Length: 183
Image 1 (cartoon, one colour):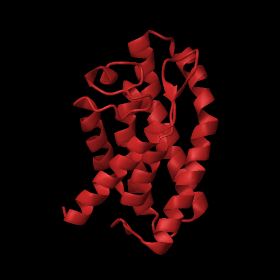
Image 2 (image 1 turned 45 degrees about the horizontal axis):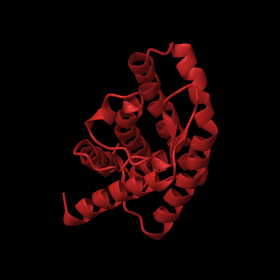
Image 3 (image 1 turned 120 degrees about the vertical axis):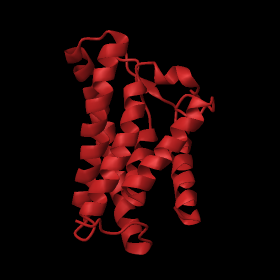
């Protein structure tokens, strides 16, 4: 790992933390807030690639674990890893990795549409597959209710996918940080 890699990892951990400045919106059915931070996750994977993207989110979560209030609403500390949103926090790491891996895999033919679909798969499907079951376990909410409540997040997440795809394509054209993944 180079100094450049470490700088990029720290930068995207900071970008994801800064996205937490926007106030969270908590839905009545679920105690998981809607935040802008999943955009940072999509950008980390889509701009840095699988390894560095996942490491940037791990760095952010380590800083949160030691008590820094870097999550939306000024949350931090170990308690957030045991609450209803903990599954989504774990999902952030996997989502950044999946988005990065798919971006690397399809790098040569990466278009805006491909980038948006990659972000939707990693940033919505993968993240929800990890986060929703955790809500069911930690909050005692039936799975059907957790799924129904999570549907309210989808429109905002789709907007984040579009924004992330635009950034990914712009970075690819002007300052590519990642390249094609070896098959």
